[in-house]
Structures are given as structure tokens and as C-alpha cells.
Image (tube, rainbow, N blue to C red; front, top):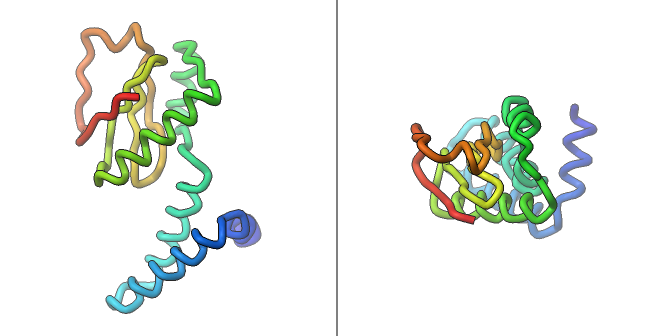
Length: 132
């Protein structure tokens, strides 16, 4: 586990490493516990890797025949970053392939809905929406 985490850290750019260290130093000055550094490090690693998919979301993509091309992934990652910049926690990202419900702090797509299934559906427990 530690070796894998260290490998991921080494993949971060120098700027990302410096920002992570600065963030940790600031958090350390506020008297926070040791887990905050680990949490910040994990969050930065997830951001660097891009959005991840839950098993449920992976199954829905397969079942619904959603095309996850490189362009769709790039658009999805950009939309998640825009939502994060606005402080979103749980967002629906709507694009040409369908809708993606994303937990922004954890960088995880929770579920997906195809374009055809979006009609007559209600999205609940979200705090924002991004159109891509």
C-alpha cells in the first residue's frame, strides 16, 4: 500500500507536490490531526488521476451502452473540476452520452443514466448541475 502510494506521489508534478506540502503546513498550523495530511494527499492523487467509477457506475455504463470515449472522459474530468471550483459536493453532469452523478470530493462517478433514460427522471440529493 505504501509503495503504491509513493509511486502515485512521484507521478504528481513538482507544483502539485509543493502545493500539497503547503496545504499540509497550513493545516498543521491550525492544530488539526495527523489524518488530514493523509486525506489531502489522497484527494490530490485522485484529482491527478481523474474521475473514478464505482462498481455500480461501471455496471450501468455497460448495461446502458454508454460510450466512454477519451473525449467524453476529458469533458467529464473538466466538468468535475468546474464543480469542485464552485464547492459542489454531489453533482449531476449532463452531456451528449447521458448524465453522470458524481461525488466531487471523492472524485467518483456514482451512477450514470443514458440520454434516453434522462427523460421523465428526477435527480435528487444533488447540490449542482454541470452541462458539458
